[in-house]
Image 1 (tube, rainbow over the protein chains, first blue to last red):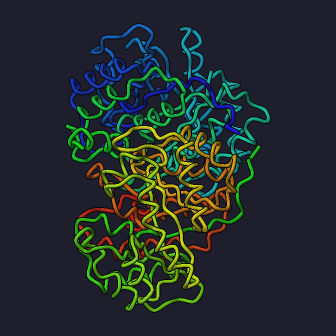
Image 2 (image 1 turned 120 degrees about the horizontal axis):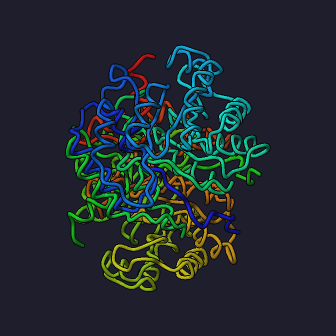
Image 3 (image 1 turned 60 degrees about the vertical axis):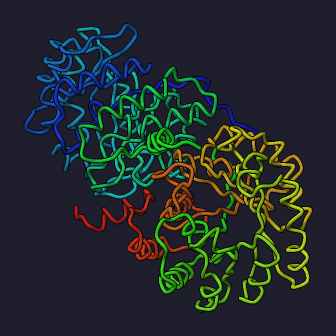
Length: 306
Length: 306
């Protein structure tokens, strides 16, 4: 009665960008590059390493060009960055970024409050970025936020998510990462979302980017896996927290995801102990504990003998 | 494509016993009875309120008789207790306990280390308890520990779990609560476990008692629900922690479970805000934060306006 789970899952590690961007402390450049090296050595072959956005908006990412200059690249690893506009895209190209990402919200209210324009306008602004990426033979990933709920609008209809997802794919994104930005979704939402999305969209074009704010991320991922989703975004140690609920969990932790997939016999190519070591070094720079349960349990077990 | 989930789930709240028993602080009697009252008012109709075990072994439960004397009982609520032997059973009967529980391990090594006898011997010792319960028309629940793994033996075979579960049912337990005592199970283990158990056992006889040590509890519960399991044990706020990994999470939190089931449209009769209030009052007596993600997010949201 076991459903058909994918045999392999590709994990996209978002800790160095989505994670660190939401931490209170600014991390030294060397610690960032060390972190990225450690993640790549742990077997993570897709690493979101920075964001080419105004340092006024996101001071934690002000050194993304230096990060890309500073890292030694492992063959087979894709180092990507978020590019909000043509200026960011230009900087990304100059930094030798492997792949870029654009973003939109599935909630009009969130789009207005977050970037001060409608969803349609926000997508229009990315046309130049898409053109530049095309001209340079660069792949573009799409991030879609608030796919299960919005802090301003509440529940978001799956039809709206499907509509914006299709637009992002039509614009040329090779994949859309479905973000439960405030972590409010449950397996109920996840079923409704994929029931709708898969009517018109091939599952290979979709990634799950779930947050663990209400502890639902792994439960939602199990459901997503049952629909055939085989790309998962996660952050080492659960870096990032939730900007909408201080002290709460944010991105699902890479350790928790890998532990689960290991136990399900789903291959990731990721070494769990090595991710733990990468997280442990990074959390030495932060004034808070990692929220990853697997990280916490594994460290506690290391410190104990029975 | 949404699987057949149960429309209703019965939650058995284990915070006052399984939870508090594993906390470092000793909780005053009044705080315990207040807690139990608050949980019952929150709509939890099955509450494990104490344990009639030697105070030398479990000092936190030394006042269980006083707890049962001190509580005002809500109609429709079952207040249960753990009874390790005939002496405990006698005390439970004198305290007017509604229902009792016996326990065994699915791991021989765990049984030997925990209670210094084999699984078969441990079950034999409960024969008098079962007889006393029968004579008094009292229902007996069975707890089975280490169903997905053992701290000493490692992985536990589903066949072994099935064997001991059947023995507990044959002895007269109306239900067996399947405990992932150290929280190591994943959806992979959960599938294997229920694929085996349901060959011979009716799902209505089984309850899921999962721990969140590695963050897997809700993911495992989703799978259990897909097999038709409709009784879930949980502890308010995630009380209890993990005795095998200090600082790590233990029992899955009632809030996280109720949040998930609410989102799935599965009825529990439990008021989430009221559970949160009950946990919040109890954690005022403890020198640690609640591990429940839903609790943390909901409290953070209360303290913030956006």
